[in-house]
Amino acid sequence: MNPYDKAHELARAVQALPQYQELRDLRRRIEGDPATLRMLQDFRGRQMELQAKQWMGQEIPAAEAETLRKLAEVVSLNRDVSQYLELEGYLERVLSDVQEILMKTLADAMLPLEPAKTGGDAQ
View 1 (cartoon, helix red, strand yellow):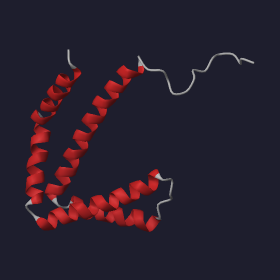
View 2: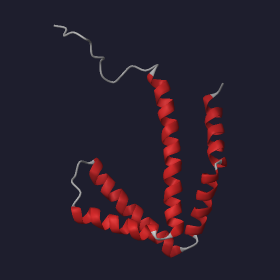
View 3: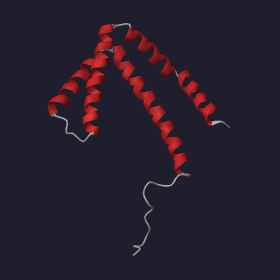
View 4: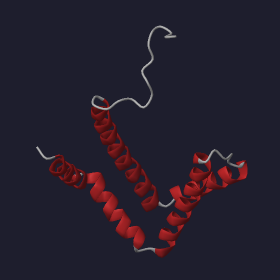
């Protein structure tokens, strides 16, 4: 069995999901509406900026968090964008779950990053 063939098979299975089809259709619709596309891109940009700050250990100013929350409310009023974000999140969770399954398989064969703790103190 070739794992690359199975990966391509999995990709085709994801593409066959109704959620994938709907996401692709929504993408086309959003791309066809410059104002909606700009709104989504602006939201994503601000979202990524705050996530980057979090990853770097920076504190997020309350005003920035509030601005993003309000922008999320506005974005959610657009039905296409709201559905797009929901479906995107769903498919990201599916792929994350698949990755977790694969990583559990690898964990059985790979050494842990940290030494295993033993019951007694070795001196």
